[in-house]
Each structure stands twice: as structure tokens, then as C-alpha cells.
Image (cartoon, rainbow, N blue to C red; front, side):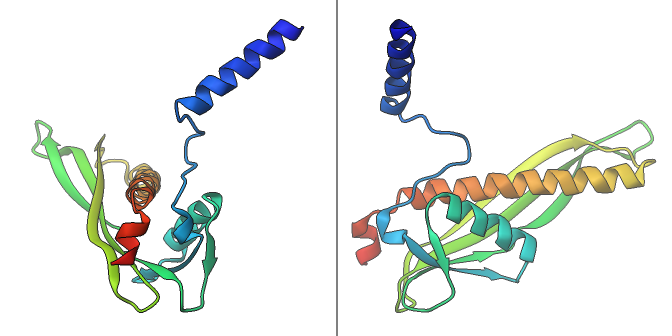
Length: 166
């Protein structure tokens, strides 16, 4: 029994030492413990997704001025045909989401960014199934937004005190 406990503790110590953490959990610099979120144009679903991720990272999202603010554009989908079938109709499409963001200090000066990030995905397209196509595009768009949020967090995690001091 004690051997199992020691084995589990050794495994946990190894995972912690290598930097492993559950997927989706991000750590941001302590200077960003409080942040104001500004998403333009306003999109309640994307804002909620971003705010939820910030809270999971231990960041308190506030509405008051006087703290760092994260300014982000709402990602909008762009579709393009990637492959055509024998009837010259779309057989595969690519959805691409792109957004810009920057981090500003309490005075409103940009201290990090502006940065542009993007995510894309190619998927099979059936022009005869409009309802299924709509549902699939919504799901792909949500997945790509999650991808963008992850990219944004990875970039913000690299921000350090020297960067914020500028």
C-alpha cells in the first residue's frame, strides 16, 4: 500500500517538475491579476468564453479603469473553397478566424501588441445538406475560438514585468 502511495507521489512530482498541467489551464503573470476586458465589436458569447478562461487562470475581470486592459477584436469567420468536386461545386471548405489584441496599461498606453492571431480548419462540405452544414460550421467556429483563446493566453503568459513597464 505504501509503495503505491510513493509511486503516485513520485508520478505527481515528475509531472509537476516537467511543467505538465491540465489542458485549458493557463497561468498569467502576477501583474495581470486584475484585468479589464474590452471586446469590439461586442460579442457576448466570445466575451463570456474569454472571461471564463481568464477566471480559470486566476485573473479577476473588472469593469473599472486603473488596471491593465485587454483589448480584443471579435473573431469573424472567413470561408473559402479549398477543393471542388466533379461538378465544380465545393467539396471542401476552409474556415479561418482571425483576431487582434493588445494589452494596455492603466493610462491607456499599449504595452504589448497589437498582435494578430489566427486559426483555421479545412472540412468536408456537402452543398445538399444546408442544416447540417450550418451546425457543423457553428461547432467549428466555437473550436477555432477556443484555439484563439489558447493562443492569446500563451502569448500573454510570455509578458513579463519589463514588458509591462514600457
